[in-house]
Every structure is written in C-alpha cells, then in structure tokens.
Length: 412
RNA sequence: CGGGAUGUGGCGCAGUUUGGUAGCGCGCACGGCUGGGGGCCGUGAGGCCGCAAGUUCAAAUCUUGUCAUCCCGACCA
Image 1 (cartoon, rainbow, N blue to C red):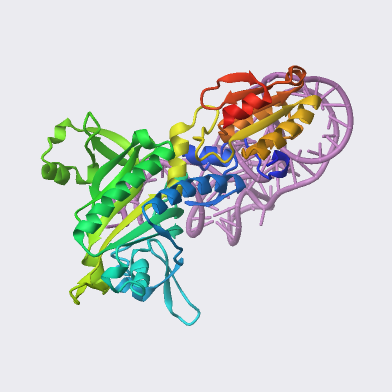
Image 2: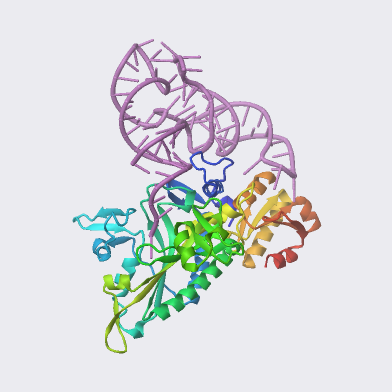
C-alpha cells in the first residue's frame, strides 16, 4: 500500500486524555481512533494487526478441531434466565435494551448461554460429541470504569471457544490440548516467554480456572510465581490455591501481569441448568460436559504494544505487524527506483507500506519507527548510484546495505 | 459508585488568581528555499472558550447546575 493513499496521519503528540501507553502510541501512529471512554475504532492500519492476531488464533483453534462460527450481538432475555444471569445483581455489566414491541434484549457480554442454547439444536447423541466451536466477537460490557486504553474497554474483540463432551475424561483431555494450543498462540504473538498459565478464581461454576497471564507493567493483576516459574497463582486465589497445591506461599514472588486468556470447565452444571443433554449408547440422557476458552484479541494487541514499545514508538513482532516493510524513498532517482523496489517486493508477496510522499527523510523515518514496522527499506539517490538499498531492523536498529536480490532473500 | 484532576481551532498548550472584544506551537492551504533524522522563510484559512442558567455595563475568567474525559479506589467469567 502506498502511504499517499492511506488516509492515516501520525501525530507528534498524544491526546491529553490518554495516559495508557498502548492507547497513546496506537492513536499517535494511526491504528486506533477513540470514540469514547473504553470504546475504540480501528483504522485500516489497526485492523491489519487485529486480523493477523485473529488468523494466528484461528489456525491454532482449527488445529484442535475448533469450528468457527459467529453468534449474534443481540441476545434473548430467556436465554440467560435459566442460569440466573439475566439478573443485574448476578451480572453487573449488562447493556440492555428493548425491541419496539417491548421485548427485552441484551447485548452480548459473553456467549456461553447463547452457545449452549444454539448447540442444543444440533447435539442430541453421543455420536455428536465431542464438539468444539469458536468465534471472534465484539463483546459489549458496561464496565463501571474503562481504563488502560484498549486493554480494558467497554467494547472489545474476543475469541471465545466452547467444547462439549460426553465425559469428564474427554473434557479434561481436550482442556489440556487447548492449553497447549494457547501456548502456541502466545508464542506466535511474541508473548510466549512472558506468559504463564495460572490458577485463578473459578467464578460461578468451578472453583478454579486457568488464566494466561503476561508479565506487563500496565496489567491489573498480581501473579505469585515460584522462582523457576513452574507455579503461578493469581493473587485473588493465593491462599486457596497454595494450600490445595501444598506450596509454601512465601516462596512465591509477586509480579504485575495482564490477563490475555482465561479457560475454565463448567462440568455439567450449566448443561443441567440449561437442559443440554445427550443420549448415550445406553439409551439414557446424560448432561453434557462443557468448557470455555477465551482470548482477548484487542487486549493482546494492547499488551504487545505495552511490552515492546521503545522511545521511538511501537515495535510489532513480525507475526502481527500490519506490514513487513516500510519503504522510504529519498530524492528524485530514489523515488524512481523505490517505485521499482515496491513492485518487486509486492510481486514477491511481501506486504509493503511505501512512503511515497513528498516528505523529508526524517519525517519518514520517524513514521516508520512510530508505526513499528519490522523492516525499513530506504532507497535514496546516493544508494541508487551504487545500485543498492538499505535495510534497517526496527527492533535492533541494525542497518545493512544490500542488493535488491539480497534484500528479498533476507526478508523471506 | 466514593475520592482527585481536567475541558480554550484537528492535536498539544498559555490565558482564569486580579472580568475589558482570544494567543502560541504542531498540523492544514498557497508560494519559495531545502533534501539521510519530524528543516527554514513568507502568506492564509480555521475558535458557539464542553453545555445551560445566573451575576455584571462587560464573562474563557466569577456563581450554580449539568455533561464529558483521565487518574486512584471499589468492581472485573
């Protein structure tokens, strides 16, 4: 894409009403637009990152036989009444409204109950199990207080998956498979080294859940970790979990983390409440074992920014960067040759953001760095004389002068 | 929902204490110079000073209300 055709404009200053680093940088670099507190729109640049993250998650969920679908944002009151969660005393983050005929509806903050209600239509026999479905959905949550930029909004993109099983053993086995899939996801997002599976509060249906927590100063949680990182417990269940695991609490050290995923087993409790049963080989009806698995897509995006940014701006891992290359043209012959290089790289399947604007070099360099594109390729008059191009790595500032063939080989 | 702070061209800010006809930087438009780190010069466009009521000859400035935003806390499947 040519920069001259991209409407995005970068800014030297961050908006005064944002203090979160992720929001400041994402707004300055033109990835997001703030609509109101906790609500952000994503620009053409921003959705490229979201789609990259989603695709990684999609591939890993498909690999464990998850089937993608999309539920609705509008939900029925009756769907939630069976489990008592329509009540605002049970769930205090509901957005609710009414149809013109007075019918009450809710805006989806979760899709647990709606998924069960829908799957009931399709799953009746042990032959239909196990099954696992997932979606990417914009969740709407009426949080009393939004904060931390895109890390905790009232509207955010989440991947939620639900698995259904005939037995506890089958659910447990699949649950462990999901943990491994999640680890692959966080590895690919560049967060693997700092993300840990932790014991956390189980909420309404189980005693403990597992959270995927990434060490991040901007996070809201406190994790207690053993020195070898083999045990990680969320502060909210520290006493319970350590006694259950037989661990001396004083050996664990606190770190600030951000929750980037949460998985939990419902067992059969929710199925029983929602009349979600299957007929077994024995001809009798049995409740279905359910588990649920979430990944905050937009939150992960915010965490990546928080963790990788330096004083010049964002530093996207190559796996989620909106473009692989930021191509800078300098001077007249530089621009002419940059046009060629652009076509050359695009034809080779490389995603290039080509800064073809009539701007001074410094402005282009600053934008390349602020936007966090992994590689900057510079084509200037003086490089054209040598028939060479320059490659600069965003993360390390390492610079090399190459032929265009070597450039392509390096980028691949 | 409790506590604190802030709302002034698209963005960042000054002006409010001591009321007197709104200013700076960035950005934007036009012209020129420049051309490897957000460069320079000139000209110009753009503002119901969050909104509403009140005090006053006169309100960005004082009073009251209200809305919004941020931070801390509580909350957070």
